[in-house]
Length: 314
Length: 249
Image (cartoon, rainbow over all chains, first blue to last red; front, side):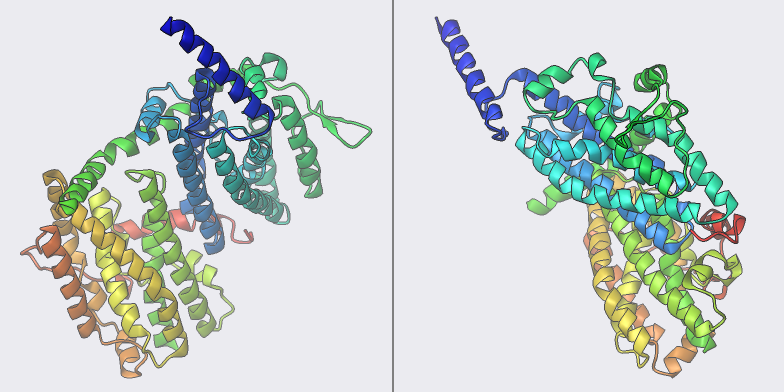
């Protein structure tokens, strides 16, 4: 009898939940939500938070070699912003009932992922430009649409993050532009960077819609607002003219220019995509080990901070 | 004016080299909030270095920029103290190095606001807020490290024992220091040393940390004679401008 009552009320709760989503109202942490919705958000928001934090490493690789005081300040501030985004997102993810420590543990155990794009190496200074312009550019395309996501804390984090990311994208483009105006070697570095970052940036939107298993439920519950392929198209249509404007060649020999000025990209190497997702990218091991090492080396510091804070409270 | 240029280089290089060490630590802090705080301090210090280097380049009048001074000067023309180039051995070393420097910066910039030189006084006013925050943070950390767990106390005392020999170079007067003091442009280093010691004693007392018995002091950086570490730091920092001298970034 009790069981039957619970079942009925769950159905009503679901109905109420879906009506809210339909009406474009935000779902807040204390609201009832289906378990699958919660699990989807736990996975997605923590993956997003980890991406911000792991993303500090490839850019951090060039801080000590930044070629001017101005570029060093910009890069440090940018990496600091990424860390800050990580904080907002961990906070948003914690509203789902999982602690930051737990999320970090899942990352270290390989149970949680981060964006595969950060498993590629930064090999010359133009890579810092390419990351800002292409990787942040791709991220913004996705995040702009996520500002309308149905979960309140995630949506609000996205609004703040988008403001800063658009700066990063402009700063990245400025690096590329300066290098294309520079010496022959600088132009070669810039072209080398787009050659290596173009396809990983396109892969950031994920598999084609036809191969994306979680998309339909996420779209129904408005966690995701636009499909992978739509977002990817928006990105290339915005970015290819920017590349051409400064004389960079997009490394896609099957690129089609449509009559209306839009573009159709060539085949994405999905074997490479899945290899990197599954841990076989050039830097997967290095990135994770770096994070684990810093976390382990900091254990005694976190512990003493905790003990000292307790002593002070007494 | 040569003495003022040298004096600016001392100020700039302490900030520049310490900020470089902090930037090496980015993405390696014990937790995310601390990573951001570390980067914040690094950014403030680059700002101080940038102002002082720009003015030093102006005074020099040879058409060089502040960036040229940062990225194209040889090692023996850097005028920072040995302390700031010491490596990031662990969080305790990083924080002790920071605390010693912050305590100096607060004492120094507080007095420098009274400088008869307009630029130096303005630089001091601009910097004092930032370095005061830095000292608050590193002082609080000294207490957490010293008066938290036993392990942390040992590690921090070890860092102090190692770094103490570099802690007094700030107060060694170079020719540039003497000239600036004479003109009323720069503060007397003896009074700064007293203020610095007072702060260190206060925080060490609260943190249950000890001043080492061995008070032997090393110096040289302020006169351009550095530890082996600086050459490696500059090799990395100056890599692109050295390799591609004609490039503008």
